[in-house]
Image (cartoon, rainbow, N blue to C red):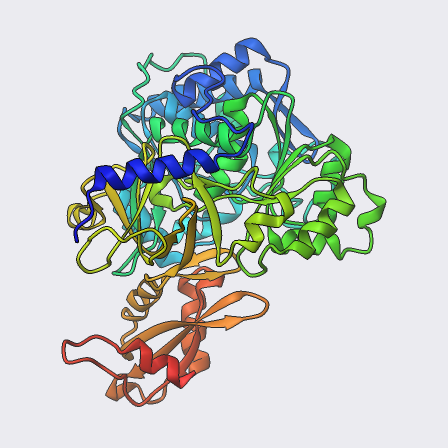
Length: 566
């Protein structure tokens, strides 16, 4: 019998209301009201100009300074022809310059395009061409890679910057060797910070439009190369408002320590949007380092951190952990990728810091992540004992349903099917991909391709990805993307990529490759070297040469038979 959707959601909301934890807000929390993200920085700069918005290894950037730098960069971008709606690529790792670029782009009404600094040549060229970006902000050490692709992309203006320009003379924290590298002169680019110092004119006043395209956050897919998810400032604001209400609860008194890459949408949320919407301070680390993390917490009395469970275990097992005061960490949210949160890890963390480790959320780039919460569900480890993969309740204003993968029919509570989500932060479509958008968004719901179940209490459980996405040390890897890249090699007749479980990395991509007839001399080692030149290191697959690939009658690789070969 076909279920009525209105009846389904009425019952589901009744259950979820009864399960709602005490003390957790049921509405989004907007500390400054429903104003644009760009206006949050301006208002916090007015209220608390000297308060550090960002601390980078001891270099403090106050709200007033960050606002001024971003205003200047908005004016500079305008001088170089950037108009509302134009895409601006940001090819930077974690550093204060990423933040000032982010806000400058939004203030101008342009579109923020974060570009993965782990990319190789083909990946970089693809994303720059797909977005049509004419302007890019690039780290000096990444300029050689940009030069390799620049003449094959629309890029006509390059701003360059370096870690060195934002480091204090005497750092207050351990600095990774790669961050300590001296500045590299680049004659073919505009030196960003000196150029900002020379700006005298103001950017044109742009009326903030919460519903205009504000960002293209790229995600992989199961068919071809990555796709740009179109997000607005309203998407960002809703994600911040619900997370500040239902899980993260940040205020201006909080100090956030963040090492998660802010070019990655989860890092953008936890290391940029949430703290700066809340008026808090973020201590930004360029990369994970256990001693650096513990030093940061002790030095700045950090109250909040978002980590992978792997990071917390490294801290727990570190011989120096007991010498650091980590008791200021009252709010710790984690994600389980390689290592999974369990009662033992939680108990050991509580003994070390006095605080609970809480699983953060289920989410996707398409939804701006953070679509569920588990705060308040830790009594007697209820959340951890309600597996498999308990992801809690939807944040305020978000709905989930479970549907049959093939027919789309609603599945009764307790039965598995496809996770479908409807949320105010749902992406507005894939950039230049109307057919993929129509396939993904149906009736206002994103059909995720993930397998899940909503239990009889209204809690969501994530059971796996029907899509073939792999998680390699927490980073998303899509077999179809690797297969598309391998298809560019003239000696490869065909390939099929699947995942292999790995104790250290979570999963490892494995590429089964059939060679073209005239490429019999190609070796697995040579193909791996070819991949290393074109793919981020975490995407490079293990190579297994096979005489032929098992194929279906319609020309698809039989992945099940490849798994048997493992």
